Amino acid sequence: MATFKLQSAMEYLMTYGWAILIIAVVLGALFELGFFNSSSLAPTIPAGACQVYRPQGPGTTAFINTEGTCNGELPQDVAKFSGGSQAITISGLPMPFNHNVTITFWMYLQRGSSSGDAFGFTKNPLVSNIGLQHSASSFGQAFVADSSTSNLFDTWSFIAFSYNGSTGTGTLYVNGVQAATGFASPFTPNASAAIGNEGFGGSVGFNGLISNVQLYNSTLSANQIQAMYTSGIGGVPIVLNNLVAWWQLNGNANDYGGSQYNGAPSGVVFTTSWKSSYTAP
Image (cartoon, rainbow, N blue to C red; front, side, top):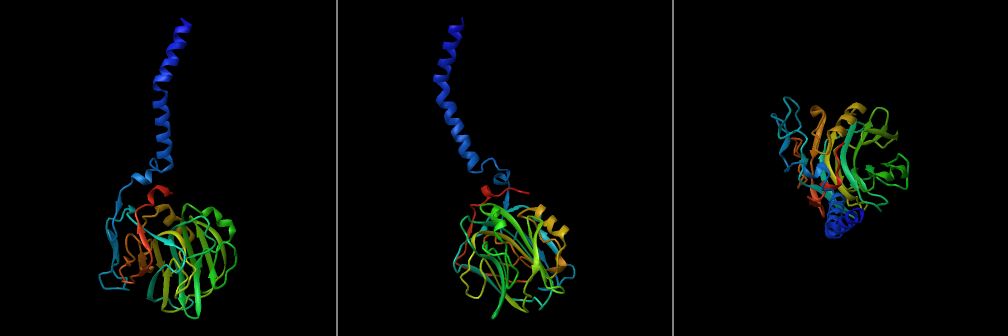
């Protein structure tokens, strides 16, 4: 009887073993591709599906509100940068000298990148950048993150930089948690800005993906920044009265913050191939 059962088991494995092995390989491949990541199955929305409405015109704050589908849905596209001089440039931002400023965005930094500014304010000859230059750890004209942020490679991260014009200090937050603080150069008046580069024709280009860039004329609190991180890559602006611009980078570089500070892409690609690498907070 035992011999018969053993023979039946062997016949079963020989008959169905290859099928079981193939199924295991397919499931493993789907897992690696992010098929079982809930973010991959979440619905997406096109550019402008949610935007800020300013009934009294660009730059005003009276009765400001959001309209459209604004429940944190994922974007269809994100901006893809490959380093070099690629950039999205914005002109004429009304950022007063020594004023409070907060810039937030989601990014996916490609492994192997030694430097690259995800966002930069520029006004020749002054430069005030938010960069990721992994060989440095100082606050000067460029606010940089040191090599301890190497865990940001090949993963989506929420970056926030808050500048206090009264004290001249900047604070960097990574995924809602304070990562560094120190002196930072003042932001210049009526500056131009560059997403994915240091600005005005610079070559310190970002290598990776960037999405949902928000600019405020105030120093957001640690609690507010934590709330923005928790809301995920599809999060809407948190303090509308202080919002300067909102570049969703969902297929274009338009400002959906209601003030028409539209960006001009140069060599930037908008891609739908990003969801498998993103995991919601």
